[in-house]
Length: 143
Length: 435
Image 1: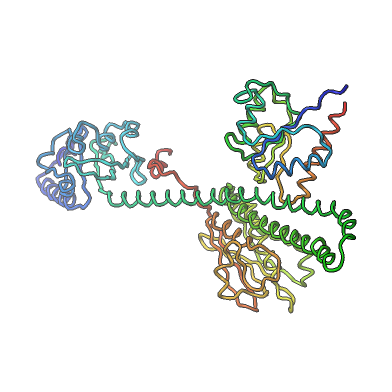
Image 2 (image 1 turned 90 degrees about the horizontal axis):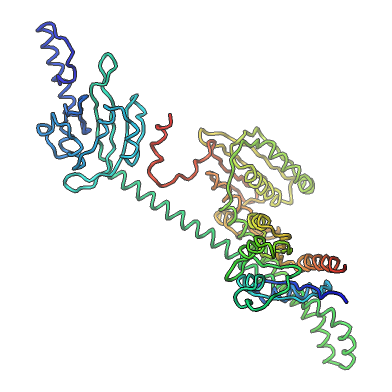
């Protein structure tokens, strides 16, 4: 019996982006459950069992895909909470954003994000980035 | 006046008379001076009070001479005036009492200060005070002279200018953040457009074998139309969406780039422009050869400017010069510079296609391009260059003859512009304090 694979948490408020990311993860043979949340507040509630998730104990995700521009709490604010908390600070975080502003990238790395992916309009590059990530995920999942 | 020189020995009557005349002459001079002026002795008593001072304060000399309570006249309550500080030599105390203060730039141990004050009639005035010690032959301070200048009008004009400058800065900041937000938020839907047209393309590929199979069930006109839709019209529509999205993405990146330029800090340093130009030419070598073009670089000075900005300015201008060379003659590009007391001015001359008079204004605007649109570009380069030059305190302009060539010139201040100073008053005169 293998352990139930951990889910992937995708925090993204643009439904189109959610679908595109999901499709690309699936194409890259990532079979993990994908939990989709559309604002930063919900992400924090989910991770720390607060608010509407107060009653449930959620499995720690394998990976968090976090958009920068989110309602309620911004991606950076969520990242800050994740990296400041002993329970969550080891979960790899991939920041997703539409801008390649060096200033923003720097801020993300300063706060401890693991990978920063600019959502390029170039679809091929975008799928490659997500797919590479997916392939990486399936290798670490094996043992 | 005798208070001023109590120790002077007067030996003969003759001397006394000429002395008397001298004193009267000095007094007349003092009285007719248009700047309100008074003198206090070492015990802070008013000894001289000129006509202009009477006019400014509304206090007659007769009522104030001998009084050591000058603060009451000015402020309506007991406080020291600038001349009192000069007498006492406790300059530190001046710091808290005035809006702006400094050592005099002209008189050793003199003090200057400015402040708003309400006179006894309730009128608000902004006064520039200037006080200096009067010393005897042994160097002891025996009196102090103070002038008062009403610079209310100037101060109000200055404040108005500061308000306008602050407003302008605010609206500039608004424009910058607007451009940033717009370009940022516009990219999100583009990701979807591009992404889902990609998905559609992939779906078509997946459909292909099914389509082939199903196609056999159709005949004649129906079959032809099916094929046309599947193989031509749908892919064509997807192509148009794709290329338009790409173009829009480039345009948005252009806005983003310009808006970032407005935020980014420039770090002036000595830049060897001759080296810089040569390194750009190495990068353009291939294109120059292709266009059969030669470049000559005159003597170029060192400038004090932001290195990256200078690279981008020269890079874009050279790039344009090469891009718009005329096809029917060997290209010639010349770069030189001249120096004026304030500016270094660079000129980049080419013998390219030139720019029509009517296009001259728009070539520096974002997304606007002049002439035949046969060379790829988004119309961002010159807008970018203009912003970079302007942010460094320079200007850019172009002189051109269509069919003969263009000269792009830009200036960079030899002494970089001071950082935008704060609006608070304590900045202007304070440098005297630090010596």
